[in-house]
Image 1: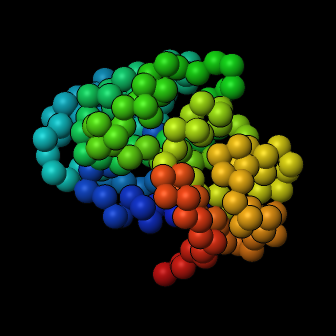
Image 2: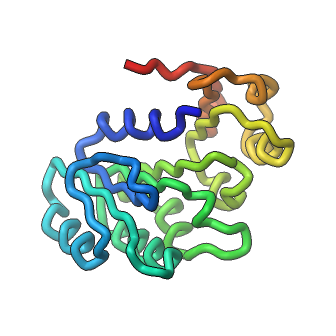
Image 3: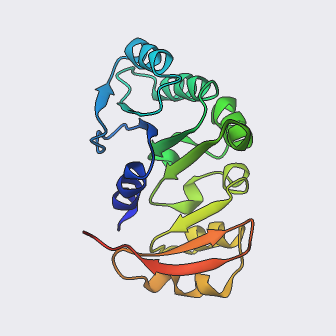
Length: 186
């Protein structure tokens, strides 16, 4: 309840944006379903201070497409990379090494990785544990709340099951600062 709305707002705050968008939810300017066009766009705009592109894989093997996009992102600098439905793409036992490398190396590239998912438990611990900031809207299941607690056992997580629409918790794993906030819809 609000995850994509928040992601869309964050997109407006960045000049260089790449969105992996299997649902075609994000109107970001340039958009393609062809990987070659996507890769060429990134090459052409590598040093451009302003660009936004969405990519929806048309390949039948979505995991291969995601791996290729992550490999492209390892060559980018200074941008926001939004991954819609990251939980669907990252199974606990099987996901591309390129996403692990991207998340691990993103600080050096100045790439902000924004993974969007409904279920926090769907994102493997190794990925969640490398996040410097986690934002969670309402979580109902014990499994999802436990996944958040594996990262931060802050008292504010007691409220995550009762959040109203657009209410969320922001966990900062660097500072330990945690805030319950409400998304303002303009």
